[in-house]
Amino acid sequence: MKLSRIILIMLFMLFSAKSWAEQDGVSMQGMLATAKYAGACGILDSLIQFQKTTKMDGGDDFVARFWAVEAARLGLSIQQLSERCNQSILAYEQFWAISEVVDE
Image (cartoon, rainbow, N blue to C red):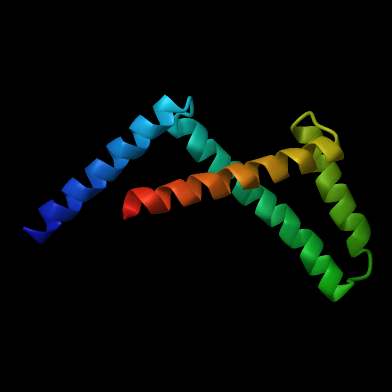
């Protein structure tokens, strides 16, 4: 009985989130893509934070090259990648806050 109740709650949350997302013009795939992008940006930011704390020899150049290669792979400038990261993290935080309301 407990498992069926959990499944029902999960289905309700899924359909509630899907309904909200469709009303606001955001697809579930869009939400997932945002989360994936925000996660990748978190890793890129971790590189910067690691270098700031360790001051590894050659680390600044490595981080700069890594960001440049990633930006080029996406067809963006480093500034554009940074802006997209900021936007995706803000969107992810909004999705997270909404999911907390749905969970209540």
